[in-house]
Length: 223
Image 1 (tube, rainbow, N blue to C red):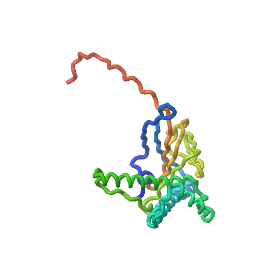
Image 2: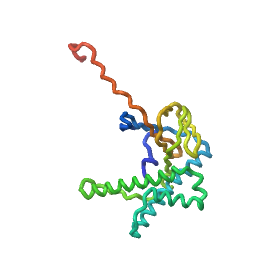
Image 3: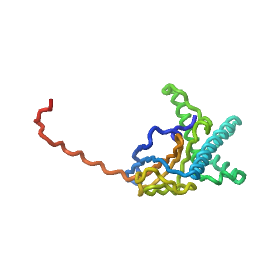
């Protein structure tokens, strides 16, 4: 089953946050999501990146299954990425997309297996009733999917710049933060529309002291 984190979304905008400690300072990891305004060439390139991420996931899954059946050590994401790099000279299409696409596709596969093994342990302990959800091959027929990027990501009031994709216009202007550290960006397609989600690190605002209640404490309630 395809991973829903890349291929489905319930609303146009979302925001989620958690707190982390970094260099003894509290920072907030916050997510922003917005719709892209792409031309035909950019849509084609986005589809290529989504296809490359799907291919990397399926390639890694097949290699892990082959190693398991042969009684060999299961290759890690790093091992699989080395194999993919070795294929690039004979596969020209691989050079048309960012290397992040393959790396993140393989990391998604590792995460899928971690969730599978965790559920297996819970089911063995009797605390999980449902299916363990063994990772399945991703099919383009179900959804185009998406791709995640790391590294050099820049945001302006009306656009975002991603590796290999270049500058992509945003339909909503002034929503993304301009002066925050962006750790990753994910593009994905939904019903013919393309969206980008970014994960940023922001300084958490100090909690404000609650304001004292005002008014006459003896006042009778309204009826």
